Length: 307
Image 1 (tube, rainbow, N blue to C red):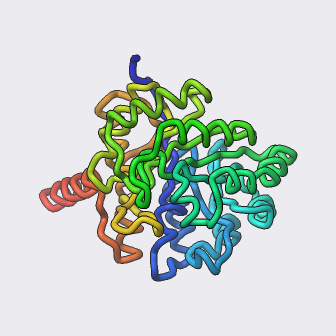
Image 2 (cartoon, rainbow, N blue to C red; image 1 turned 90 degrees about the horizontal axis):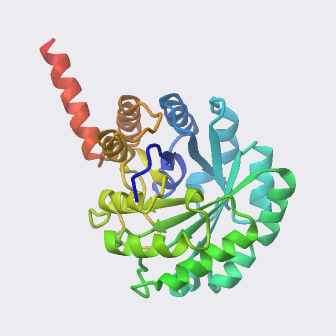
């Protein structure tokens, strides 16, 4: 299959990337980050989470963040919503898309939210119905699709089952997420070959973590399966609170460098993203783990020093 000529990059840094930071990131910093990302041209930004502050204190200011950002026309601003209360918050905040989630691993589901996969997804039925009634886009995220920290290998059939359940809820888009970054290209091919038989290829996305350094290889494998939506986190922010040792999402700068090299259109300004990665890394005192980002920053500073 020929590679896509254009892809959509969903920037997840402001939500998935920052949610596990122990020190509270100031609301103004989150707003500034999102505004920088909007200006860089992202068509979709995961901006906030409407979950209980008790569980994710870093996301307690979701309403303030959504109220303070400068929205770029045509861009989708997504928020995570675990229940109807979260959905009401998302609605009040004028979110363009809500994100619901479920694991492909039974063990992960039980340890994470103390219920089965089927039960966890059924809980989202009223949320999905409410979103449909209000004309709000729904995205379903399938976590641990390529491996689980508790049970190890996750059967492809389990991933297909969760995709079918999300499809039945009316999801507009479904993410296949390698939550702990253990996937390899071979497994990516197997999983996407299976899920594209039960859900439209053009509405599936790849969400890869880089724990074992396989994220870019996995993205390329997904491209070979015709997948044209990918998630990435500026400066490689993020991790998984339920999977010890799991590093962040693949860095957005690295993904854009790959796409540019392949001649695949993204509509995103890499230099502006590099600057945004430098901004947030400095602001929160965290190392920038984007290889392309660091290389391009070093090159720019070297050229500036020589001029």
